[in-house]
Image 1 (cartoon, rainbow, N blue to C red):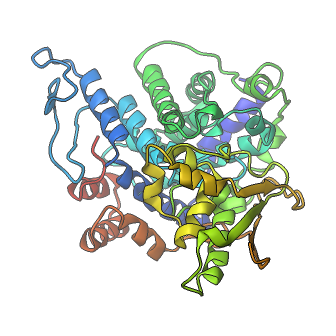
Image 2 (image 1 turned 180 degrees about the vertical axis):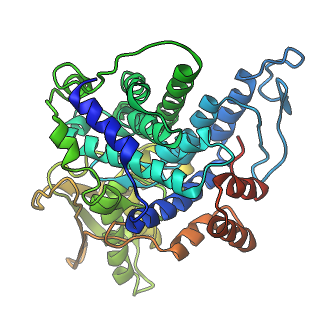
Length: 470
């Protein structure tokens, strides 16, 4: 085992978060936010189709065919729930694929600046797939914190170059984080843990050209599936893998990022204070790329000023300018989106919504084709890069609206709602859960979350309320 891998293995084995309530409290609200991001996605056609595919693929029954429209898929009973879908007895790896895909499908899940990607969709999906009946909340959350710590440190070391080269770190780094979290929860040690990290690392994949398509949430699903599959393979076979995945000369960092990483690069940053604290998580109140959150809030403040007059119309706008620091809009790759999915990664589409309606309209991200009239309006929105360069962990955006009469309105935002310095509250999470659940259901979920010691007891409550269908 090389020194860097040994250091990572040691921290996964030895990390104690018993006295780190600051980290545990973030992990708790992140789990509820994860569920609030996953639950509405279970109503989406693509998510249900993946569930049906998993149900059909995983069957060992020969009595029922593979008709994807059947009410029974190869022996997997599909029952009616809130989404009309519930498939049981699938493999852990396929369960992980479903959870990862569904929780990232709407791009409603949290993000982190060092990673330049998404933590919870990976880590909680992996942990839910390998959970055992006696696992406690403390063990579950500790594993999440460890996975987040490793992902965040890796992201710090390889970004922004990794992101700007076109990699999607939710996939490339996520599979390693999934393995770390699984290893922590299931108590792997020494070379067994190193081999799990190794098999995960060699499966790193995910490229950002998939943004705006179902391929992007599939990155999350595949990363989680591959991490879980690696764990199961090594647990149930005698196969051996390298125990030097992070060797400074020929390991993952050198191959993926062409950088040399030392043990001290890991040790000096581990839980100091913790990736969940600094830089912290960005959580969302609308399903679009987190790189647009500052601009959306700035546009909303401007829109409220404009709408003080009931007579305001979009046609009165001459030009909208969205000001970024250099490179800060890299994830917002569509300047003239043609579909709602592409619009999730377009500051033009998001700002258009806010100025046209006064706020973001979530349903507009689901449309198959954006009207030409809307695209004509978006053509009046331009990007400029005249704000000072900021660190990888900071975000700032300014929006300037110039009317045809010459009036100008401008607003700058750097700590919008959901940012680490302006985090979502429990009430915000309740509102997000309310997109899928009724108020009494939310009450029961929160009570179970607060009052159960074992994670499985809480998951049973979730299933009764119509969440987690695979």
